[in-house]
Image 1 (tube, rainbow, N blue to C red):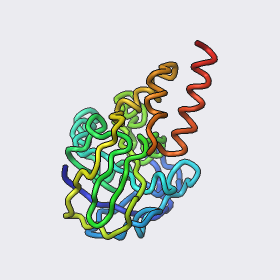
Image 2: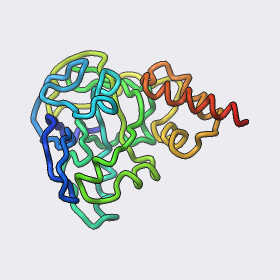
Image 3: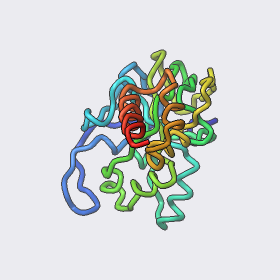
Length: 215
């Protein structure tokens, strides 16, 4: 596991790929260090607080490995932190990381809480149909809460502190959420994770109720 880029940014108005104006925090700048609090990195924030941010979603992470695939697929060269992530990391794909896994990140400690639900702000910024492809593949990245505050530097190591005992990968949870809404057993596997973000817990509970009602 390796930290590739550390990025933060505050909401600002941008011109989208279609020439419209949008206020968003997706445009992050790579930095050398930042303090990570329970609410997120100092100097970082989101515009849409209903769907982004909060203690369960304080840190956004995206696997560096996917950049090569998207660059090839869309014949482009994506900028650093293209998806608005704080941490771009290698060796930490959705298939390798489980919800509930705990990592040491510099002086801080973080815990994976849910897969990311992509929004069309990514498409508006980059000008490519990323959201659809991220959902299809499950290559969404994921979100984390902060268990211990501390300084994080761009050359810090990311180390596994503790694997979650349920063993539900982000990719498995993404597959259940996006593609298998009637998979009762799969939904229950996700709901059994104590570390699951409250928002995702509510969403999966709703899925379970509907699946049981139609079974």
